[in-house]
Image (cartoon, rainbow, N blue to C red; front, side, top):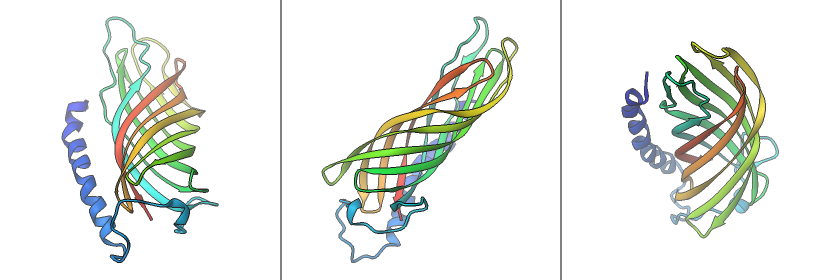
Length: 208
């Protein structure tokens, strides 16, 4: 199944995200200030991660970019959609932690396909830019599971830890929801060699 067959589902999911944000925000006390600013240091809400507060969860969809290492004469196309779901919390205004599941989609390569998924744990540094925008960077590790099939070259399954890092920008839709755009890089072990997979996503984060 290629990216074109996923495209309607992806567009529908992205279009539905603002509706989910609106539904999420409507459940909060209407006496809260209705500007879009958010002060993490003043928020004592709970988090699902130990030793953190100001918890959130999110969902992102986007496009993977595998290091292809292709053989001439065979297809080579990483056209599938990828995505992740995650939750996090803050140690303080500037530093937090995040854990999530990432599915990197599939790469058509050398007469077969390559698939990857993993669990990521990262430290996240955030810098607010006024009331609406923020930028963030992250560094951590991904425990990945990969599977490689093909007509030529090594095939099989691999798993293990690898370095991950990334950066992004957020736009506050409301005091409890944020639109995010992210780039992440994950170093993973495949049957043929270690290589990187870049992930470009957009999504929504919801604060508890």
